[in-house]
Length: 354
Length: 274
Image 1 (tube, rainbow over the protein chains, first blue to last red):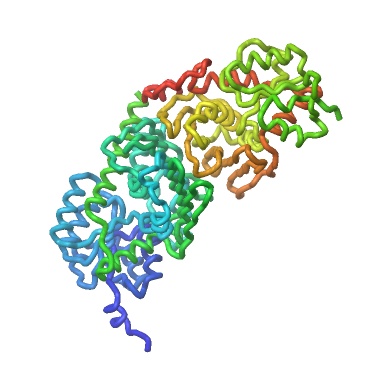
Image 2: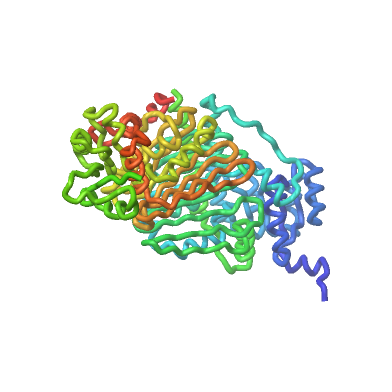
């Protein structure tokens, strides 16, 4: 017998979105459309009422322009925060205090260590689990790599993150039809302040996807030293650093290429790991992890879903008591590393221009 | 076709080359070889000059480790071929031609060479810089950002101002290999050069708005390609400018002409290069 709408609703977790931009439209809603047996989108909020109404109507959700209204909505069990970065921390805190069952916050979940500490305290106080949308950490290809890499986290001497992608719009349009997309002109790197800001923004907007993975191979990062940093057109960076006694290289360029190349490489004395990720937005399955040691190769993936779907599956398991939420300490360390690199790289670009 | 004599005992691996070019090369036996093989260890330039002065029609220097001296010039120098494990791969020459129209609007250039032992780093550096120079064209003098037993990290800028990153890494996970990438606004070029232990071909891929193109692969070891060059030189069909190229390479490599250790990087050095 087919379920009624209300019966279906009681069997699923209600999701409320704060922010209805491209990430919500082209990433999360298509991901949740594959998980209708677990989640139902019940409420969406956007500062632009027309955008909220249009997005809400797509998924049959209530819409509003009020975060408070969403937090007071009892149909919302899980709050997904997809607003501009500067609002993340206060909205995470508000969602925890509203007694929701879980919070998914897009990265970065805070823009300062002070904000991160506040979030940690509120999460401890309320017991509301927080998941940061660092999607690659939930990618089945990456999770499979963890099972293959042996002592590579200890023996790795070089870690390289490479991201070459077309503008997000190319893959957003493959994923869904997006309304009200923001636009920005290419930066002028001849101005050192612009170049420095672009590198800093690139670390916090792009490298941050891979930095939690990089951190898995670092014993610590208090000794972080930026050796080189420069802006790469159209929007990107090249950063070399020593951290935790290892060498880390971060490279990115968002340009007009049609061919994405999103890779994490880890090189050790007798083993290497390469994880090739699929582009964001498209539901193209998982990363492929290749572990090589002494001429033998182990490969994992591709699996059928990507990290975005993986993070929603994890939230369901956390709410059901089948999985633990990432520790606040770990999330804060991920953020601290990203902030330290961003600030160090920005300062390095400015110093080199003197 | 003319055959030239060589003493296969002069270098490890040379008998295989002679066997693979049986029409062009023949063992010299007890006579003086027409083509000379010179190990690239300390003093190679003197030994190569001696061979050419003594009448050799050509000389192949295997992996030179130090700068050439001025003992040879003009016609003498044009008979000397420098044989690199990676830079002499036929695929690198194909990549250089394909990269030429991309260089002026490159966003980023990178080359990474993995070796299996720390002891190989110094020799590999000159091979890497020579390869990068052939594919990426002119660039500023390289500075060393970091070096230790696990790898060296160097940086410079292409003539057009794009960042250049050269990396040497030590791992026994894979055979030695080289990967180059020249990134442009709408694609670029990627070159993967395998170890010269086999004739596995380099792969040169060019990405542009109309798709991706794989250049025809050439199944020839870099060593055999170098010996084919010296045969052509001996026959009067070609000349070598390898010594002049190497003198230029030394000026941009982060080593002195005597092969001393690279300098350490200071952020202000990057501005000096721009």
